[in-house]
Length: 457
Ligand SMILES: *Cc1c(COP(=O)(O)O)cnc(C)c1O
Image (cartoon, rainbow, N blue to C red; front, top):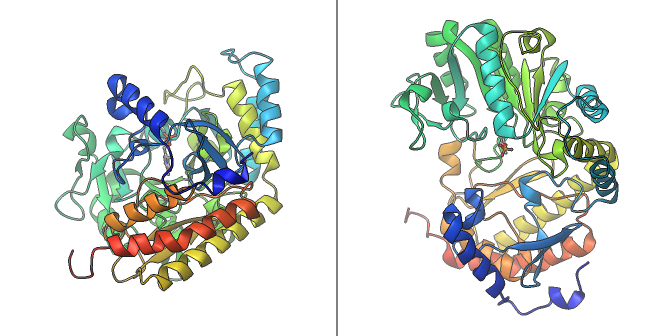
């Protein structure tokens, strides 16, 4: 674990080894990283190359330690090297790493997820992207329709048809969000503003009989945390489910980030279970892999039975249901007891309160938004609640960069982007939390100094 002396190290931490590795990486890999946000482009500076991690701590190749508030972008619900998860992984590795045949572990993991969520049948895949891509193919195959509705600011992995930006009007088709996606891929996608029931009603009124599915993050976390609002007394997700049902479209709830993190059953357990509706399809990833590549999509038995080999919709994967990944995922879900969720909530409460106090004291306008223990801090000039992507984009990126680097210098690794959730784990103990609390006042002041003065943007 972390020597106390490391935590008191002077702010300017050595990064020479990370710098050398970053240079080597950039020579052979685009941006030196294998997923863009890791490159620190949004905050500047050199990404820390991590040598090891334990509990709530990351240790980089220069020997610096950090409290980890990324948690691998969500998966590490229990913290790093949780003993039961490590034991399950080591036992699985000792039996071989991949067979290409069915295993008991797959059945057990799927049973665990079916028991916790409204899905009746589930198929395992290896990434969240694969899960959402497959769910959309299945929805199209099942309904015999082509159109897909999504929300601006919701991220569902790098599926071509979902890397789309809103077109010129609310009910016009989307344009590619990146080069490399043909217009023909997004010409069947409608992108709507989140939390906007009028836009949803208009899209379904115009195109309802051609819409195969609507996909949404169960509670968006990829534009920062933007909780679903209430429509006519019901939750936004319930409204979406009802709208889809009325038009014969499928409702896909993407719980890759929220699933098994915001509660035992994910966002569904916090806003859906008591309203008596279920998504037609759901997607999962991150936590359910326990830090290894595993994801899944599932839902109604009649819809899922359209999938090969029972039905005509093709989907497959060489490493799907990998025995090591399923062992890590099952051990993680089994160790995620009610006490774990209570601890996550308590840690998040402490951090949120400290952020509110220190940012207010520094005169830094902010708004903190959460779903369960997942939260994010928007540095918007008027501190108004953020309900959609346009609102999220008002966050002060320069101020966030200053906050990020001050925290990093003080031994706290925030996500290197202003639009990400902050993640805690069951391993974030009093000592780790104290490091964050000690770092916040100076970081808030640094952010306040860097903030764009109101009116300037
Ligand atoms: C991370 C994420 C994905 C993509 O998962 P990958 O495993 O990175 O492909 C999809 N949907 C949501 C909501 C996510 O947060």
